[in-house]
Length: 371
Image 1: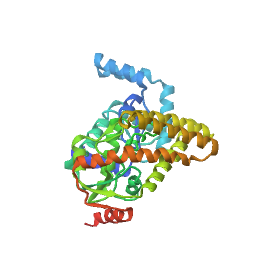
Image 2 (image 1 turned 90 degrees about the vertical axis):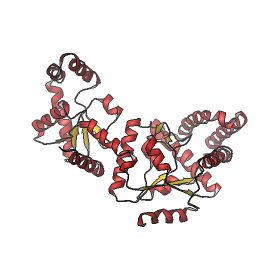
Image 3 (image 1 turned 45 degrees about the horizontal axis):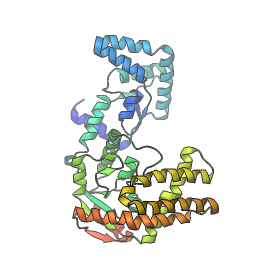
Image 4 (image 1 turned 90 degrees about the horizontal axis):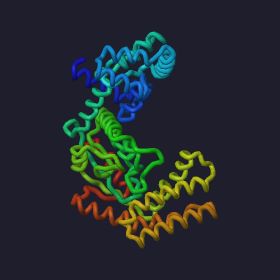
């Protein structure tokens, strides 16, 4: 397959979000995978280690013999049934391994033997797909102009962007809300997976023919994940628009997301149906998050916020009303998030091209693709 044909095939897979079967070992999959892939490994981590060690010491033929001995007839039948069941559900699915070699070839052969299903394989495997995805993170590959949407914490930037077709949600890709209290109950993806997700989102954005790319004004880091340096600089070169909103609306937005929704998610994770148990699990996580900014808050302010958080929980436990949590939210906004936002905006020395209420910003952003 020629390079241009391969690139076109990879782009089609990403745009269509073609289901994929990754037959690499779990540890390889965890280190990074194609976003639409499911891991149904030919070899587990220990078996892969044995085969790899044999390959390095005794060569390909001996490694192949060891692999055959590790995967007996029972395991072959079990895996073949699982792969075939997946392909019956997703007939367009393709198979890949690390480099498009022995493991994906073996899987394709067993699938055909088991169910007379011919399945396509990715030439070059994950290594080739990863190289392609990384190439699409280079600013030279972009055919659009970035536009950053800024605004104070709680102004509803993410909600606004998600309602517009030409946007990308960096926080969703990184599984983090981009603030001290922004950790979800599920972990962030690895750095390679974050890059792969971002690349796939950019490829799909490009396929939509958009002239502008709308992003939240995040900076380079989203939680512990980060944008490649050149891409971050490209994003920051775009125009900045700033969303304004009343203070109490911001308080309510944060209250709904970081209190009401966060407590519900905590219950989903722990299986705790009782509202009080969910709340105290949430409280423990919030306390840990608050401790991470204790130095920046200062000892007196930190203790004040901590006391209000705990008081809010006791009030919620006693009365079933979480509204008291708005007290510590107001304090954090006034004395932590707003001063930090003002400082960062001054430091960037970037004048917004537009500042306004949501209706004005929305109308402006919708008009960009018509320019």
